[in-house]
Image (cartoon, rainbow, N blue to C red):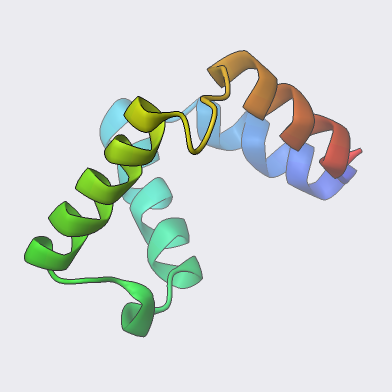
Amino acid sequence: MSSAAEQVTANALALSENERLAIATALWESLKSHTDIPDEETADLISLGRARKLVDGTVKPVRHEDVFKRARSMLN
């Protein structure tokens, strides 16, 4: 993470929970493409399909710690 990003993060973490939530929401909204967001019914079908793949062994689960470890290594 750049020093500017580290400074922004440190400043943001010093804010109240409501202020942090507002900032997180604004950042999230700036990233997501509204055309990529499925409606609720489609999202449910996607979730069920993914759950089925986990149950039948088509895909293997990845531990939370491993996901974040990999993400951190990609950021450095």
